[in-house]
Amino acid sequence: MARQEKEQVKSNGSAGLQGNGSAGRVAVAEPKAAKAGARKGVPSQVSAVMGETRDWAAAAKASRDAAAKASAEVKWQEWLTPEQMVRIYRLMYTSRKTDDREMMLKRQQKIFFQISCAGHEALQVAAGMALKPGYDWVVPYYRDRALALTVGSSVEDQLLQAVGAAEDVSSGGRQMP
Image (cartoon, rainbow, N blue to C red; front, top):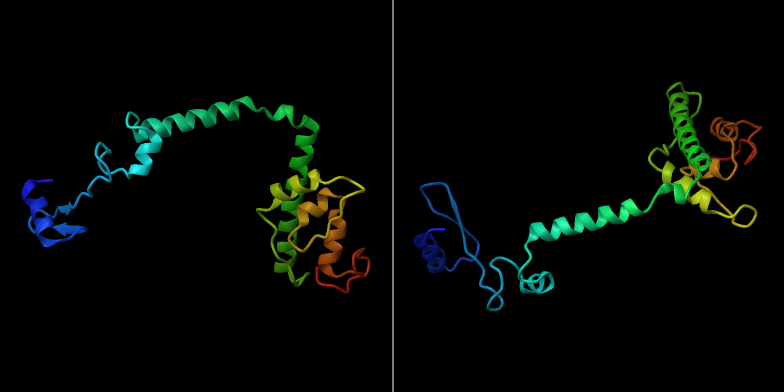
């Protein structure tokens, strides 16, 4: 910033943005450092935490490198078997396809109520797989399709509930899906 522009900003008493009038540039009043020796434009708290010798780019690179190293050390094979991974994928896929089928039935006016569950599949399958069979209770609501499939509900049960069939195991067709 030119010395004349800095003086103009100081003389106007403005600490914000100030146009220079002719070149279309904007002059910015630079904040005074909180303490002597602090880097220009960096709050003193940040400078104290990061240290005076590190710059922002180096800190960001170090953070990315540490995250990459940590994620490389954890392998999914240590947590899940290939059979479990296939089961997870099938449950998520089945949930999404059932949701798509219900949307199609609604467009055909064969069902009259449908709220999409898309986007919730992975979380719900993970929650269902974390439950202890025969011990934990689940009370799903209308967006918990993948959770219900994971704990043993069938697609047929869900579609019977959607069309309000008397064979619906949950309510005999008397309840909102």
